Image 1 (cartoon, chains in turn red, orange):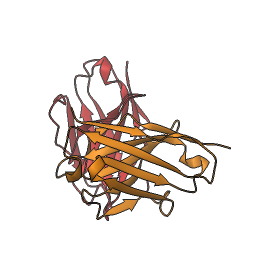
Image 2 (cartoon, chains in turn cyan, red):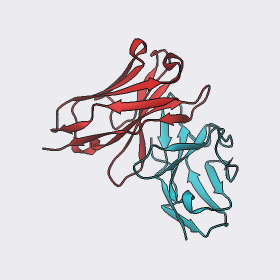
Image 3 (cartoon, one colour):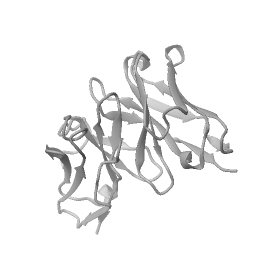
Image 4 (cartoon, helix red, strand yellow):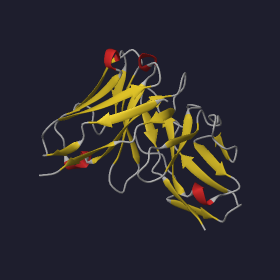
Length: 110
Length: 119
């Protein structure tokens, strides 16, 4: 149950695109298409952005998209907006009814 | 609307116990798997425990296994986390989260309840 690996921080200017990576192992990200992504503003409840690698819940802007290759999943945010500044976490099902989160990435909108 | 509200947090001494509660509303509580996720001060989210919709299956993070138990009362739309032998490392905001229908993601989260383990 080691945490998935995410970059500690990323940044971009308004209108630009950024990609956050999430690297796991053959036991979690690599074995299941059950990677999800969350946006977390301090002091608030986390918000689901992407489920099952690529699925976007209703209400989530299509600026947010997910993908996966091998043991690494990615979240891309296009057309950056000031309100996108937050912490972002990936999560993966890891088998035998366990889950694992990434360490989190702080997104700064310059 | 769909909502989860946690309670039961507080300040507790190392070695003591605490029980957290999470009341769900706006959805059929008994048909969804439920989880606890925590965030220690200055740290990221950590998955803690899971319980299936029918209470038949559960599992825990290695860091809490053998000390924490998870349960649910369908009649009260309530999820519980019994935390025993608490240590300072258990200090965190604890969130309950509902599983997305048919999936493995967490689509509804509570606002969290704070647990501080300190002597």
